[in-house]
Every structure is written in structure tokens, then in C-alpha cells.
Length: 89
Image 1 (spheres, one colour):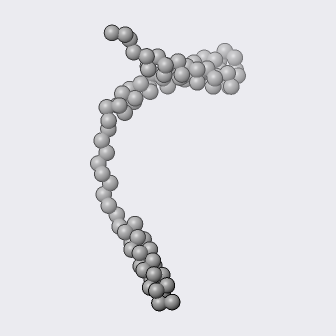
Image 2 (spheres, rainbow, N blue to C red):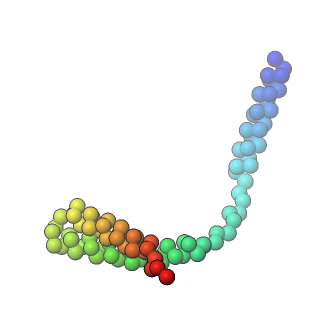
Image 3 (cartoon, rainbow, N blue to C red):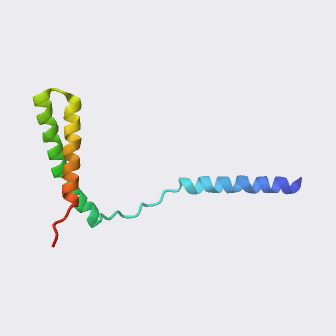
């Protein structure tokens, strides 16, 4: 019986220690921006512009919001595929 009480007390003490260590603030590590993230950021702008223009054009012509959304997604995918392919050389 005393072994059970001792193990229960130990578990409570460990739980309290974990709770206290979780409350202690630590400084987050400095974030660095990778070159891959910078390249992706450069590619997003033209895709957004093409998708918005295609969606707006289809919306003006057809007045169908679902068709406009489909055209925007199609333009986004075309621009993404175009950005992925690299010229041979």
C-alpha cells in the first residue's frame, strides 16, 4: 500500500513539475527565410494576378460565379505548371 502511495505522489510531483516547466517562457529561436521561400514568394504574385484577371473576365462575360471560380482555378494551375517547367539547356 505504501508503494502505491509513493508512486502516486511521485506522479503528482512529476505532473506539477511539467506544468511549471510549461509555464516558463523561453525566447523563440530566430527565424530565417530560406531561398526556396523567397522564390515561392516571387512566383505567387503573377499567379494571383492571372487567376484574378481570368476570374473577373469570365464573371463579366458570363455572370456565372461558379464559372468565374473555375476559370480562376484553371489560370492558377496553368501558371503553376508554367512556373514548374524549366527551359532545357
